[in-house]
Image 1 (cartoon, rainbow, N blue to C red):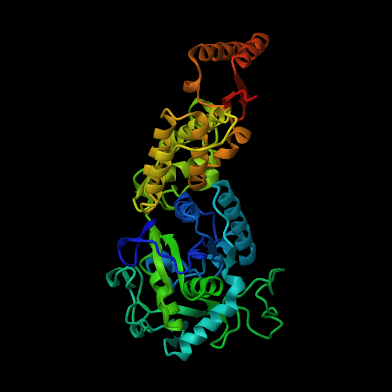
Image 2 (cartoon, rainbow, N blue to C red):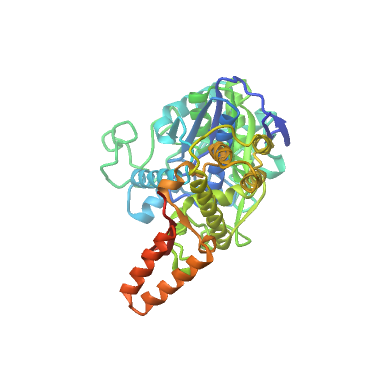
Amino acid sequence: MLRIYNSLSRAVEDFKPIDPDNVRVYTCGPTVYDFAHIGNFRTYTTSDLLLRILAYNKYKVTYLMNLTDVGHLTGDNQGDADSGEDRLEKSAKKEGKTAWEVAAFYADAFLKDYEKLNLTKPLKFVKATDHVPEQIELIQILEKKGYTYTISDGVYFDTAKFPNYGQLSDLDEIKEGARVEVNPEKKNPRDFALWKFSPEGEKRPASSAEGMTGEAPASQRGERQRRQMEWASPWGVGFPGWHIECSAMSMKYLGNHFDIHVGGMDLKSTHHPNEIAQSEAATGETFVNYWVHGAFMLVAGERMSKSLSNNYKIYDLEKQTLPAGRQGLDPLALRYLYLQTHYRQEMNFTFQALEAAQQALTHLRNEIIELSKSSQLDAGCAEFETQFLEAINDDLNTPQALAVVWEMLKSDYPNYAKLTSLLKFDSVLGLDLANAGSTTNEVLLDAVPAHVRQMIEEREVFRKNKHFGQADHMRNRIKKEGFEVIDGKKGLQIKKVVS
């Protein structure tokens, strides 16, 4: 039976779906004002692993992920998500684009990186700006039930009227004013914005994107221009708060009560408690049964931050220069690196560790190529399949699952059995091993027989001395031994010749 750690109960629990024929899962996705970094993608990989493990356990899954493209304010960095400037608006000013253009560019970049990591596509990537009517409707329900009040900068949720507020995190963790000035108009420091009014005096630049709000441009409505992204509402022109979007969109597609909500540990103290409060206050039902949070990632022992220039993106890995002149790390090596640390343990990223992960991935691909010479797929390695299932069902224990993989490959089982089991395992690991032979057959130098390594080194000497005819002759001799040498932008690559 699948067991997962539930942040709400602070315990590992047996997974019991609401509907065994349709497990419903929601993940908090990125705010698309910048490229998602490798810490973000660790969370999204955790979501992907959970989905794959559910499928491995024969569950059918409906999966949803949001793209936040409005309402996430910069004050969240200082501990108050209701203050500061909208991240999209700020990025638009910095880049000389419209907020709509910024959102479209970074959403597209995220989806490309998402694909590079072989992450499972959700039923839908839902955007906050496409669901403003649903958010307004949800706020109106809360207003009718007496959970809201209005102050000069917006409509707020009154947390004092929701007795279980803070149950997911800890009330001591939900603080305002530790690093920012407390809003004196709020009844309680923990109250949060549902709808924010457009600030006075912010002129919106004319652009072709105006009107993408779903209504006529402000200039045509006879209204004063304030923001690039703003909407009319019963309370005045403005935009939704950051928290309300996830409740409105998840409940629209997954129902008022669904199974699993995934997010990073940074969302556990305020964003997710706010989701619970506004959702359960509106519906009177339990919002989510299981809350799954991925731990933080360090980089060389330090917290990730722009100021330290260590919040690496996928493109930073792809252009990284490696020893021996090779360039570019495979994004799937990052996925392998994630698998080596349990999702609830803090992970320390280094490029040395990532290169080691790439070497391990290359070895694994070479194993697949070798095993694929077997002409049959039949019964797998039963004892290892049992061990693998036990590992992944033990709160997504991927380090143990990887250990099972390598133990199986060293075992005496026949190649066809190893291949059968390894392909099954990869339906969870997500390393795209089934395509290893078509995407790469690269091998590491230390995996090449000694006499072939000698030939490769001799060829390199010929090349450096510009004896290209002798170098080509040596290349042909190496190929007869079953290996191919390639001189390219990535430096020297060695590949097995696959018939």
